[in-house]
Length: 405
Image (cartoon, rainbow, N blue to C red; front, top):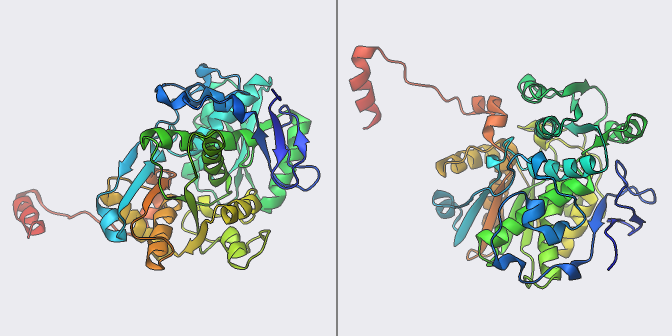
């Protein structure tokens, strides 16, 4: 049986599993984990297992030395059948995969959990990332759990509340002024000089963590997977990871085919969608990014080119939505009992657009991934101008009755 290795998603060049903090030296594309899928038992999912996904789905993580002590209870998030949005969107079946239930309230914890396992196993004592806030908090939490010194590089426009939310874990935060793409490249150099494991958005092990969502969905839907899977696109790592999980299920013969993917970006930062619409094979850096949520503002997504390739192969759809559509989607999700941050709501906004444009059939079975909690970015609530009813105590009965009319 061949040993696990890393392979460039662009040119196919091979690298050792011990290689970290790098992209392909030949074509500057991301790397991904490859291993012998023939070793995966086809009946693995017939027995339900609990615990860290590296052990729960062990044959798909055969290369990982899983240490449960490093986990924070990530994964096993709810799959919620829609009640109100199904009627609004006019779909037969709609589900929300609620990633707000992860330890730091976003999907990032799946990827961080896997990265930390790898870093710890390779003997690293220092951990870091580049973040707009959410991944920083995740890496800070897991770094603290692993007893690692943690360094978080942030964009210069990250709000204070996001910085405080990661500093509480003891991480050192740096607001870096300058080009985001150049900063990414600079960190790969810094990593070698200071022996820091940077869990960046296209770290192969981070992408491996995200594929666990596909395995969970297979279990939760009892093998009857959706026709379409809708995901917001930032760096592109989440989309790559989930699709890789479905592809591994297909290639082991556990499922017959993968769901089609719908990737969604905000109009204020849409480099991947723009390249898709123009028929290009590569993304171009987006200029003057401005969105409702800093999570959406990656002007040159590290996994953007691979997302383009994969979604074209998958017969997927790429869409962009405006701020009004995102805010409407947030309100619609709230009726389901989910407070999603704007970056998460882009997925539902994109699905609504896809149905209106008749890009998918009305009888489709669809899963929308809710990537992060609205509690991660409360300032967005000012867009709705929510105000309480102000009333004197002796007038409360009348004021309450007035709201019931």
